[in-house]
Image: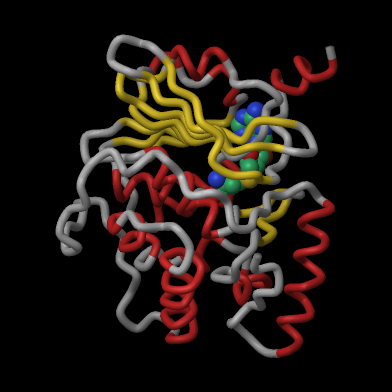
Length: 280
Ligand code: SAH
């Protein structure tokens, strides 16, 4: 079990701040996970040559602060490849996207640490490992249409946009949806559409989806999301209350469902309709 990893980014003050924030993040109900069992779901498609870059690629600028370049490299090597992230596309994309740009200025030293980081409105950007694990389990491909629920900072949407044809992202908190939309546009993403709303019902007008990734936990798998999953598609969703499991659901071409839990996790609860269902 690795429970004592420290941020390799920043000074001792930043480390103390990081520790405090981690406690706050856990109390605040953000996600955290250590060492899950390896997923049985292999990536859906063979990895392409590392040089394949989608047309939408935003540049991790030359001239980017070398601290961030170094921090991102160690994030990929230690926290992703060093665990069970084996999908070369996922490793390549997360090694390129400037994650610090998704984190407010004052928390940028935490952007590549092995934990969630605050993004305002009581929400967090998910721990890098969890983003990688969910993306790998969802098996995106260049022709995929993806639905991302819980836009937050927009980081997961950006990772998906690099691997899929189109990404539709729903965020329930309007200010977060607006800032993510602006950020993603400034970064040059043209294949992501963000809207404010309750992701419980999915986005029926844009369905079916080959990939659905959910970043807030309902206490059951929302039926509309199952309905909007394409044949051969995968839905990755944390399910539960205080204790949650990361569930991967694969819909076969004949519409039969295969379900597997791949890790214990801790995400913020899904709000809106999922909350009402929980209160009943
Ligand atoms: N994917 C995000 C992680 C954000 S944390 C990232 O990469 O930064 C989870 C997000 O889910 C929060 O922003 C929260 O406001 C949002 N959320 C919670 N319930 C929701 C719902 N029913 N529909 C859409 N978004 C929801």
